[in-house]
Image (cartoon, rainbow over all chains, first blue to last red; front, top):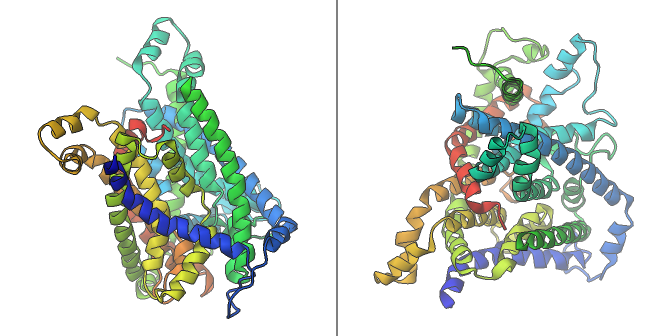
Length: 283
Length: 272
């Protein structure tokens, strides 16, 4: 069957050029001492970059910051997204308008979202701290200990709609019969949700959480717009750390090594999840 | 007759109301700020004031519309390539199970790649091929994440098309490709439209690649917006106007595609 490969060829070719080649080249870079500033051929240094970054506390700091960010953001998004999707599904009045309005944030460029909240949450000029002060609360959103949570909340503002979108689609594709059977049997709303809706929604929920987590791992714009990694290195995420190492300090070899460590971790997690999904769908 | 309000429906309305306010208030605030003078900006609670257009004049003069045009051009080229290649590939994967689950896994895996891995090779290649003053590197970088997403979406749409359609067309004497282009493709046109708009917003919104790969004098929109925050000190008013310029087109687009997106995803895009 050559037709199917002919149809697949354009995607494979473009992916090869736009993903495969840079990936291979990055792997090569991670094994050299390449610096943007030095001319001449880079030297092959083997695994030196990997040893360096794996023993660099700043990289582990960036990894743990990112982990906190992803877990807080995605957990909140899942709960809120599920609640909003359930509410939207029942909503009749001004249906399309409500949906479009609630989905809007995910279409906005993240840098604009980051800057908006940098402005709104600013200690002196921001409307939100000012409003909080009138009721006697003083909270520095970008202060030590708070900044990482604030970034996660910005992520929640922008990306809960994505969760809503996927879960709403999932809810609307649930077959009617089991729901009606539950209603006829006189099951309570909560029981129906727990025992009928949630199990049917699990595959979509899994994919939604996976996609959101993968995307949240790449957080860059919010950090760039608000804290630039501060206070100290408290909000330095992996993507921001890689950007700094590669672009600001010109150490492409090390930056590529960090990226590959991340890739290895993520791919392992996905492979495990993918196995599980395939096993559960085979059942 | 008065409809009885159950506690559930009150809670539902309350939740949606709070969510709607949470979404709109920050944007309204920024819109308001774009009409304030620097002195008025120092008073965050100020709602009623004499609006002025100085900020808007300032961003237009800084070439924000040209940046928006460049962003639109990059996004249009990226999406055009992605839709053609993506619909062919998605069909091969959906109808012929081409490459098995490895292809689907590969497509998803491409989503995982941190832009920080890919950007340095793009940068060195751009210099080596003397393409660093063009938008070719940015377009290729955007293809690396727009193409997989569009392909993935379209697999779901093609899954919903009955196979018998293509078989019928083959019986009627169409070649395989003609059957795909003339019979199957029109069935998923609405889905392609939604996927294209979604892909457009992905490209339009990206800053990371644009920051590093686009020509420094002729920036794309997200980078231009960020510039109001960094290089010239913080120009809050102008920045607010720039944010509104970036937000309005995509919010309008989202209004038109949300229903199709929900449909397309329930059609199977979220199944493996």
